[in-house]
Image (cartoon, rainbow, N blue to C red; front, side, top):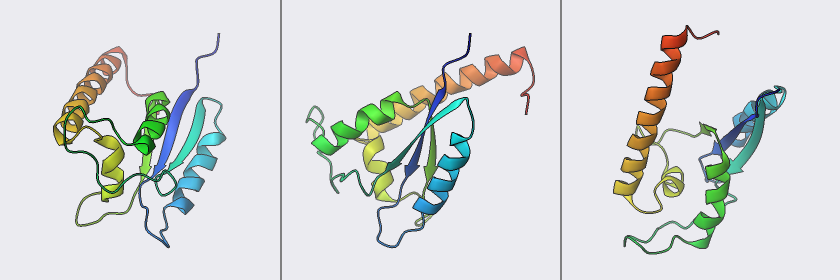
Length: 132
């Protein structure tokens, strides 16, 4: 029985005109596609038409573009984020899809994910060394 392929989303985080991000993102996606254990999607935030500003009120529905992007993100098992560095951080375009309900919800979600991955990695290390 073969394992289900790992779904990887390669996200292009810059939306600026003349950006370089598509070149490395396409290369990463092409290399990943050569593997039989990965299923790769490229998500270009410049083509997702995300709004510049999201509602600040909790409970306000996310804009349609954010709702349309959510299933792609939810279906992914892992992410490769290709992004430039702006002032020692990521561009705002990359933050919008990660926090449609605001910074507190994003922080809570990230900590939940960190805990989940941390436990998974701790248990995997206890079973044996990384094979790579």
